[in-house]
Amino acid sequence: MKLTILAALAAACAFVGAPSFAQSPATPQSKSPSQTAAVASAYEKISAADFVNNIVMRNMFDVQAARLAEQKGDQSHKTFAQREISNHTKMTDDLKAMAKSKKINASIPTGLTTEYQQRIDRLQKLSGKQFDEAYGNEVLRNHENLNALLDRYAKNGDNTELKQWASKTVPEVRQQLAAAAELK
Image (cartoon, rainbow, N blue to C red; front, side, top):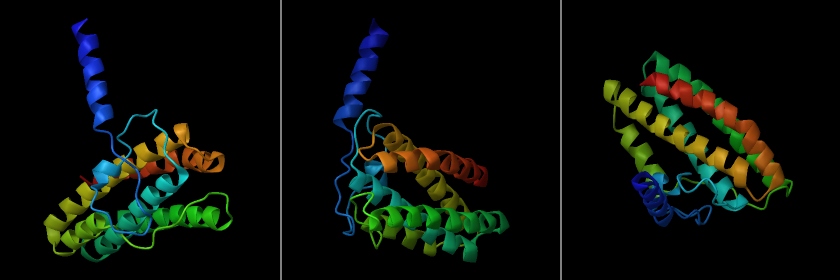
């Protein structure tokens, strides 16, 4: 009985504190990526526009962070970064093609939000082991949130074609997540 009440209370707290996915696509926001991550209830719907905005933002961050890792990281980080650039560029290109063909009704962001830019700026200031550790932490966190967001949309999205794309992309991101965890 106590366990059931505690579980219900925890679920209620999670629901009340669930993040909003409303963001204007190309406008810097002050929301934390963890607030806009897919940490809300797995049953909560997310619109195609919000999903695309969040995915593209995470992809842009991963590509920019990977470009830094190519310059500053040790060999394992450089190898990981090369795959990151390829994988996340492809994901964004897929979404751009769907938006251009009107298969989804979403705008593609063209720049990072303020918080993502601050995370890139922080990485730029680091070098050596400090950079490697910070980069590893950033990509692990970003891939955990990206995986959750894709999984959530695949289950509860509002656009059939985008749901299929998310379902197809989840295994790829899980592989990236496992590789990111190995950087630690």
